[in-house]
Image (cartoon, rainbow, N blue to C red; front, side, top):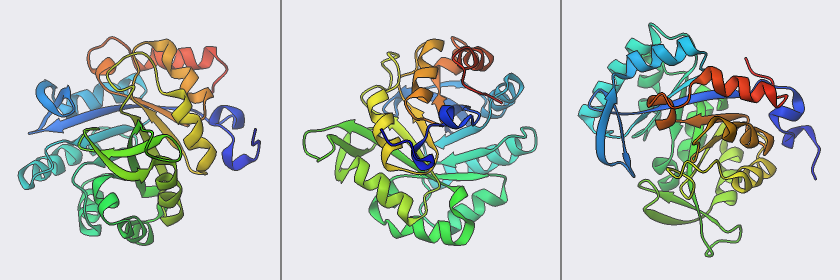
Length: 265
């Protein structure tokens, strides 16, 4: 096992693990559906962000699932109002296609920007954003599923997992980091929505090939699921519905992590 610092886990290094709620936003409301279909509203994003800040969330991630011109305008307002009231890092993704998009989001209070489809279509976008704003701002979002078509057995997908690309997930993660991605958000399409736990094998494999922070996403169903993801190599754990529904609260996740000897903020 590689024990070099670049591939050591957050738990190994004594670095505080981060707990991140993700809010999918459309039309100014937090929504939830399956693969972005049959969306139902789950609350006001600014109010939810304030609640998570009060609970001790380390960061907030917004995903603009509409990402149209109108949706983006609404999203700017959501980010601006949140940044005025919530004093933890805000990551915004969805529909980011250019350096100018990043500049506009940063101007209204985004600390980091998530990119996915646009980077797949034009990988130079990663270099351009990192060169202008720094790698720490660039979060590459990876929607990954198992596939026998790639050397690693994992393929990158788009459109909520419905469309497979030709990209081997681990090769793409390595390329993205070499181009300047400062963080990898690893969403397991296979685990997403199952509430059976994070994909620990995928988390381990991405950790082994990347020397930047890894965020595990997809599959959280109970408090006990979070610590194994950190132990598998994630630096942060992200979830949505289980937080929005009140089924799991952030202080309970942090207590469970500390009970396993994992530092938290």
